[in-house]
Figure 1 (spheres, rainbow, N blue to C red):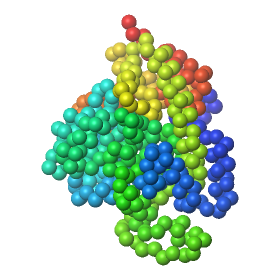
Figure 2: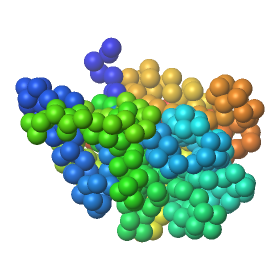
Figure 3: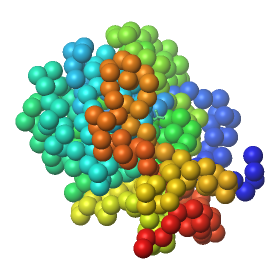
Figure 4: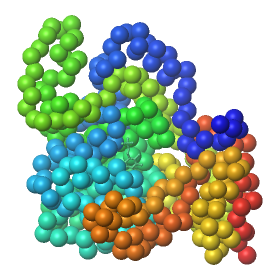
Length: 387
Ligand SMILES: *Cc1c(COP(=O)(O)O)cnc(C)c1O
């Protein structure tokens, strides 16, 4: 690979993480153990909840899957979610034996539209699964009011939303469950990793148990120096537990979560300032009394204005050695969902339009000023100015 290639969303790994992983390896305890416990406690403290309200798992996909199993919804129940999300959101609904129903997004916030949620409710609806897209909080006042009115569970996909707040409250603490990702591109990285947060400690205990085969004790408790303990399998669970090697990275990533946010805030401000005169769509202003997690900086490239297609823009950036992303082609653009559900992208026109024109620019805390300058000049060289 070209050594000057600017990798999209490169993780910022520092010496603390490296030393902790080494210490973990030397300790001989690689699996779920004391470092996972510490990472869970740190994460709970960051979210302002009790340690028994969270459970570390090996991905956000796993977190959403066990949440929906722990929610105890009858098979075939409908779960309303957004078409502008990663496939994992919809696949987790399907793996839990539930039926996804899509509700279109708002054109400006790109988050699920509460009016579209209401329009999608049927007698079989049991849950809403909002995604705080790019780190911008969904309209949780309206979503929670709809959930209360129709007696629906809420499972928040917080893969982009570790730092997100809405009216003074942290993302993931509104619904019955909040599901977080520590995948390599996310705001806190463990390689692969995730966290389930639940308002109800009994639900998070069930999610934790489901994440380890449905066993009544975790391995740490079985094999630690407290002596061997028998376990009972009390449910048919999954193999989704987080390991200490992952938590070793996460502990130090989480300790720097605010510092990393500030670096991305500076990058965001630079993009807003320097891309303002170009014929591309920029992110909407932040809603009052909210905090955006600044996970993705997305622009909209409309060929009628920008002078080139979105895919032409992606190719152009790539040939300038700048990595970009697409978040996301709308869910019904994918063949699997078209064939299984007969979905067509045109049924959710706002998500379709965004998915066909969106581009994510690099927004890693590792970006230097000269990296940012390179990205800005790259965009300037490819798209027209507004007249
Ligand atoms: C990354 C992502 C996921 C999946 O997270 P994993 O930890 O990789 O399973 C789910 N939803 C959204 C919106 C994501 O961006």
